[in-house]
Figure 1: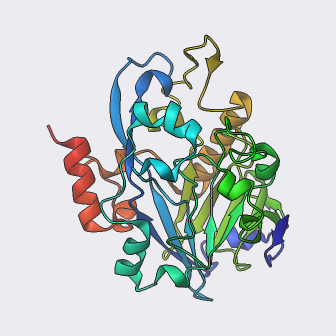
Figure 2: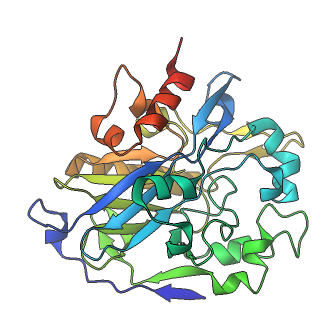
Length: 321
């Protein structure tokens, strides 16, 4: 089942500096977890380190419409499927944000959870997507095309599945959770993009590679700069910069695995994001990258989108010593 959001055809002017439609973007603390370098980058040591799990709040300045991009983590095990509890939580040790996503939105914007209408999930993995209705009871959740075929049957019908049946199996959830239908048009180097607000300010983009239905977004903010919410297209800035390749590692049962389901498609998506960044001087924010808040080499624009308390917390925890 899909939802068709009003969209205008691509106009080259939407990528030009004289286009005026913009959004406000806030980067939210979605918690953190422990990653292992050897499963992220080829040739990296078997060493663990903490990474953030960013979420985003986007407000269209013309219409005032607001959406949440991804939902972040929880350290409450019952928030996740048995597969995730048994196979991932022990190794990755997720930590909830110091202040919940819903409370961050209230404190920064005065928007109560009951008033949020839209959540877009970049993809269906557990560290981005989980049941959301306790915090956002009236929200509708949107996914990329193909997600439901990928994630059904989920754990309520197939207990060993990693996918959350409370979202993908429960008929009641189908009233809240849908796939985006587009229309999908070309946008810069991207083949399938959707002008979500219909004014060229915020583009939802199909980004193959990480998993079926994977999405990224490009948001134009005041001054004309584009912010690319690049999600899990890669899990380290060094991969994005071409300094390392994606890791391929061996699971306990002997199977080979990679954090990207389709390596060829994932590399092509990264090339397209880099081309967009180079052409339009865009700022790229990966879901689990904190290099831009490094006190030595901060990205001032991205830093301005982050609450000061969150910035100080992550700088202290990730860059001290």
